[in-house]
Length: 193
Image 1: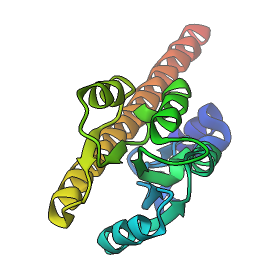
Image 2: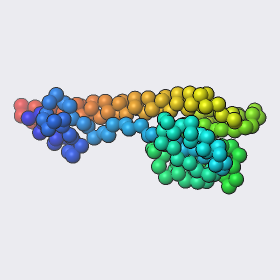
Image 3: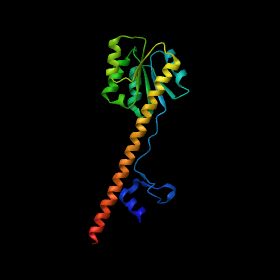
Image 4: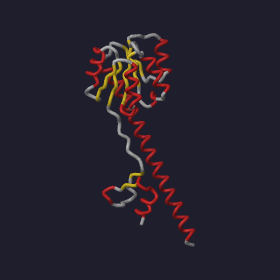
């Protein structure tokens, strides 16, 4: 029947709800999008990390990195784990702009929103940060309700975009599956006429 055909066409990718065929309720080789819940704070100053952790720990799981190199290692090891990165500009070892350059070179600024946090307000710094793909520049000292609103809004936007992308992919796979059924049925009918 249709369930057998579905299983034949999809191999091990076919799954059914409640163990029955139903009306094409199978999952078609796609895992639903699960939004990351971890915010990474990259700042060499433990007090600044503590302040940001205090602000955001009510909304996210918070991880910290004491410089840009450690932050970059964490992000590149598992970018899918992070919903946002708060990146200080002035740090030893690897500063925020250098870290941002690496993230852009790896295409990660399109996957994880990055916020630059700085006491500087030079136009050249702002321009370079935005050219490198930073989502927003947040001034120090941070104002809790402002930084929370800015970060949460962008995180929700990224989540919505990824969720929509996942739904589109799922529909595309479903249409491809239906196209295979129609094509195989036509081949079957042509072979038996």
